[in-house]
Length: 555
Ligand code: ADP
Ligand code: MG
Image (cartoon, rainbow, N blue to C red; front, top):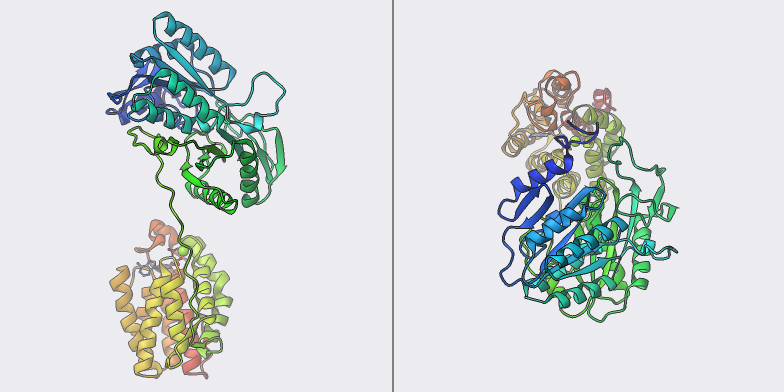
């Protein structure tokens, strides 16, 4: 029974079924108990004297269950979604994982967790097991609340658990680990922002409404509203502000900083890495050292759209702990921080400008006129970017330079632009078209040379893209025009007819092939684009032909 219309958990108990799936996926790393629910490491390091145990509400995956294993936790105890585990679960999981040197509990600072872990600690001690607790309370947004509850525990938990796990593997004692954990916590602060709330368990929409253009600044990992909702500044400004506040809150350190950019569930990999780059630049600009860096989803808030930044002021030895190897489903170990090689400065190209080349100016005019229709055609049968690709490449060519002695400057310029800079399937294929036309028109002239160029272009496009005439691609226009007879006007007419006829062909190459019969009735954008290119060429080789008029269905 799926519990919500918009989610995909299976079974009556989504947490139990997720744990069962987790057990199936990680048979060498963990052992899973379903009742009481806990996860223990299958093969902890033999050097470890103290067991590391953590836990908390579900919905934050991969925290904590994903951090169990070699180089990570010895046990993790998942509660219900966003709810503390029961003390009995914690007790059972910790007892199962306990080592002769005792148990260290790593607890995020929430009332329910604190109470349940404390009760479990009492029960463990009653069994003769030594227990210490490290309370993680890194969330800067809850710093100034005039309550007894203190700061929430959030992203720093990842770094705390990683450092402690490496130290535990080196055989550290319970007292030393507890002290180390508290120092890492004291040196760490986090801040989180969100542009969209998570979907509340049992609900169907976002847990709270956030109008477009607003940002929840200082949001919690359970979707607790932040102390402030702000008008959304640019991403750079948000990151800069977060970094500034975090730096003011952690101690200064000569050893450098660890940074964790953590996705809250619906932030993409592209976004978290890009945020990390901004943080790195911010540290750099202040002359501070980034000594360890992580970006990814480690502490989610279900599907909240946002991220947190955690900053830890490092002490000597911690970077080595962060980098120590792990064999857990998801606990990261850091790598040496990499440097970024700046993009090569554009070499001064030299050569001559081509913006007045007759072919290129004709192409620029015709492509601009056809762009809306080309975009529409690709929206119907592909992804809508073909018009931009053809137009972008043409503009790049118009702004470029070619060698002084180039006999076909316009064709050389579009060839370079499309081969080097235009994306999509069509960009490089059009580059080959221009290359073959240029070669043919360097060796010969007039409409026969154009046909020779089209024949070799068709062969090149087939070699690379595999499309045969009849597959509903640009190859169909090339084929029709290459095999035409007569003058330049006849060649262009054949190209236009060939392009138009693709509307009746079933797509067998490119994106349109996913559409099957649904593509019928609309001509292929790449095929139409070739007719536009040939119209520009015909305008130049025979100005008496009304080339623009012949392609006017699309311009
Ligand atoms: P993408 O499909 O990557 O978005 P574009 O939109 O730039 O690429 O170009 C789409 C055009 O590329 C199609 O209309 C078709 O004419 C051409 N095309 C795609 N695949 C091939 C292929 N294998 N051979 C020849 N032409 C192709
Ligand atoms: Mg496309």
